[in-house]
Amino acid sequence: MGALNEEPRRLGGGQSRCPYCGLLQDRVATLEHEWVLLEPDMRPLAHTVPAEHRWIELSDGRVTVYGVCPPDQFQRCRIEHGLACPAQPLPDLWPWLTSLRGENARRVERQNDPKPPPPPEQWPHAG
Image (tube, rainbow, N blue to C red; front, side, top):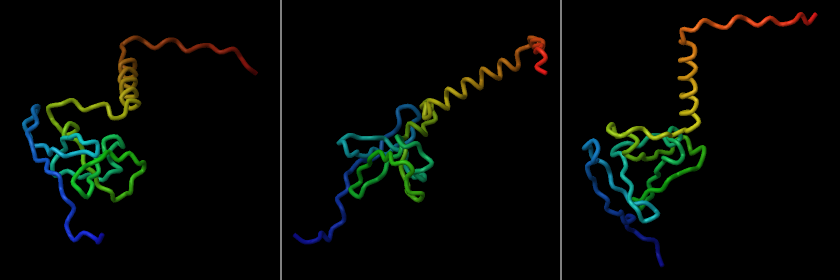
């Protein structure tokens, strides 16, 4: 058994058009023997992408979700086309942030409410 002098065999995936926006998306095999549709020509730094949405390319052409936090600062990853598709709603990447945004929107509504503010409370003298 000697070292192979060949390049690793790459799995063929190809491209297809998104049924929502019509743009091309890369069809790539996963470690779990499934396929994922990734944004072509997009490889952001992994630490800028939420852990459950980081797809790391392996030497044989497959990808796997890379949930290590924090990743190496120079590691690149791929993202699913659905995150970049202009015709699909953006998924709730951080539920706590979505809740906070909703609460802040309600606070703005309360602040802009035309009702007069309640009179200040009179506190007893604590002296």
